[in-house]
Structure formats: structure tokens, C-alpha cells
Length: 145
Image 1: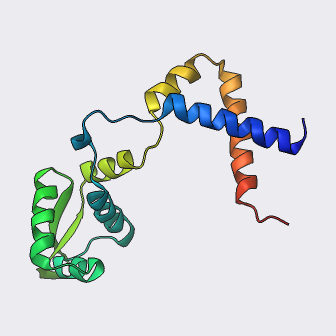
Image 2 (image 1 turned 60 degrees about the horizontal axis):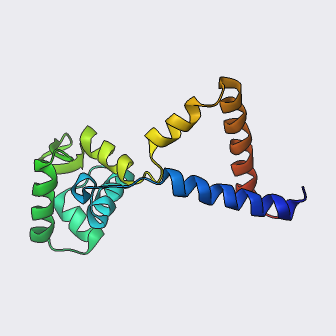
């Protein structure tokens, strides 16, 4: 099989994998909205921020953000803590549940479907698949000569 045939076959297999293992969400309330996911992701990347810092980062009024923060804190996704360096300042940060919600919101494939398919492979086959796929992805990341 030459490289072009490999590429076509791989694409077909990738599409089939996606079609059979795509994560389907029955209740949209189970996952963060795009706006909420963006806020959680921003906090995860930036670290704890005060409400005024968040307002500057997002270009939004503190009053608008405050409502959103209150809602996410009530869901258990955010926490407010006093800044140890300045007790007057309150920092907003992801809770453990917020980190889990963010991680879950970025999942594309259904983990249970993948695990069920993996269970039908022998352990050495699973190891080979992951080893080869890891090498393939590493080669995709390399610059093209």
C-alpha cells in the first residue's frame, strides 16, 4: 500500500471511528455552554483572577460577569478565595468540579464506546494500536520537509 492509499484508508477509518464513537449529549444542560466553556478554559489557562481582572480579560462589565460567576459558583464549578497576598482581594478559580466539567466539555469521543471496543482487543493489540497511533501523531506534528 502506497502513502496515498494509506491516507485514504486512514481517513475512512477515522471517519468510521468518529461516526461510531462520537459523544452524543442527550441533555444539553449536562455540559457547559460555549460561553461558559470559554470562561472556564480562560481561567484554567490564566490562573485565579479577580472579578475586575476578568472584566478586563473578557471586555465585559463586572455586573454581567458577576451574575455568570454567581451561577457557576452555585453549580460548584467556581470558587472564590481571598488572595493570600492581599486579603481585600477575592480571586475566582475553578473548583475540582469545574475542572472536571471543562475536561468533559472538550471530549469528542464517547469513552464508554471506546472502552467497549478496546475490550474486544487483546492487551498486546491495544498496546500496539496506541504505540503506532502515538508515533503517527508525532509524525503529523513534525514539520514537512
